[in-house]
Length: 85
Image 1 (cartoon, rainbow, N blue to C red):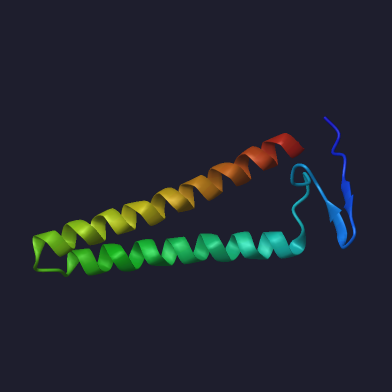
Image 2 (image 1 turned 180 degrees about the horizontal axis):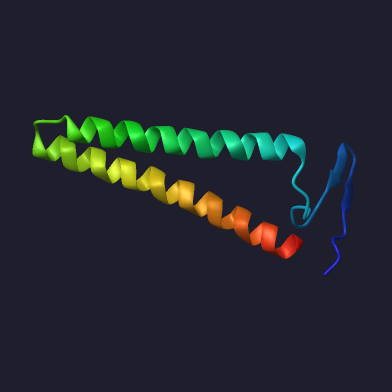
């Protein structure tokens, strides 16, 4: 399906995002991966050093959430890479 841009007075708006990852997109994705990985590590560290079981549980869940986000980003990138090949 070809993308048909809609002309709007201030610029072009696409129905779907283009199938291109720009340098700026790539840098932002790299930042998002780093943020999630760092947050996951910090949560794991804090949970390991927590005395309170409820806080430890909350930190574990938070770390798992960041791990899921990291894995979702990687999955999207792998799909995009396979489609480009």
